[in-house]
Image (cartoon, helix red, strand yellow):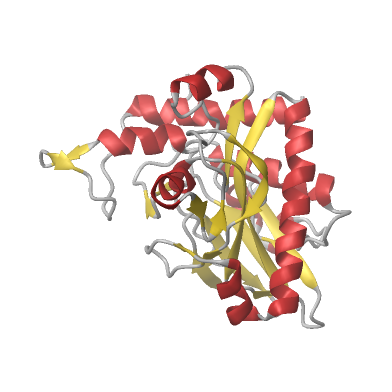
Length: 306
């Protein structure tokens, strides 16, 4: 079994490039004025809190999956990849920190909206539906259950939060106020098209993409570009087809290839005899949870690329 080792990269430490920012998972370095080296670490975040234990191999798997999807979906919208080799911009000694887990991308002006598309009712969407029969202001039919497939995919954007804070679900109308009707509409329509295309590809491989989120940026010329990661288990809820119907009938969360396994463990975790309050620091992940999460990520990539 895979166990945490020195090969896991919790935090990169490149000195040949200026560090721009550390996100929940990625460390971003400036390459001149127009490019960014994105290094996917093995960090795991859940409920917007970074876990102390890395998931060995996770950063490489995330990067390979993102590259797979960028290639498959490039006909719908341009993406931020430059085509340049990430290893070419660091010193030879730093190559092991970069190899197979990095992307060399265009430097863009980020749009402060997370473009969330849901094809199924799950997670916070299910909780919101139970209270209001709607998700992010999108009304839904009566009688839906946990993990139910929606009549059609819905766009439920979120406002990006500061590091360590929770993203906030917002309405489409709010995104119009933030970025204007033209950009808000284009992002919505492109996001739904990306989800529908990806969901069909994944279903062919025996996987359901329940929901996902996309991020976009603008080039200096104003072109809309898909950026960051795309359709990884970190940004998407993946379910194997087998087991879905039984879970749906029971009203339970289906088996998953994403962080739901960790989320479910954290929901019952105790800190000082009380349920964890979903703020840092996170409870220490047991070795079994780390190993099972690593295995889930590996299996998702293997099924997708088989």
